[in-house]
Length: 83
Image (cartoon, rainbow, N blue to C red; front, top):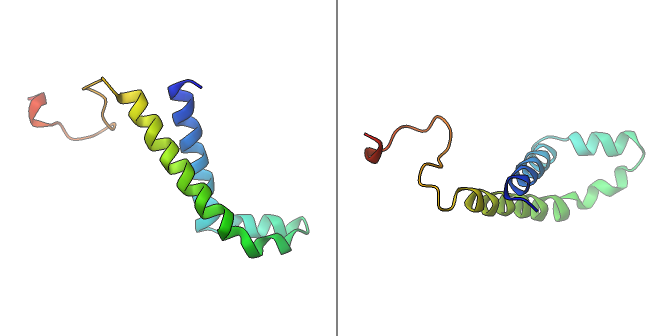
């Protein structure tokens, strides 16, 4: 998989799982389709999956930016070496 695609996948998965963990979106959706019984063990799946996607994002960011000294977070303040 390409490094930028890996980064996009990691960020998309992290955002989706954070949304499901922080808000009751998944509980409401499962309840609406009649699968409310599945919500009892969601934490056992969502928290490790969130950790996986965060680590995947970090590894992909490292792979995209390795060897590029100018690779920084957008809108970051300038460093001393930039002056």
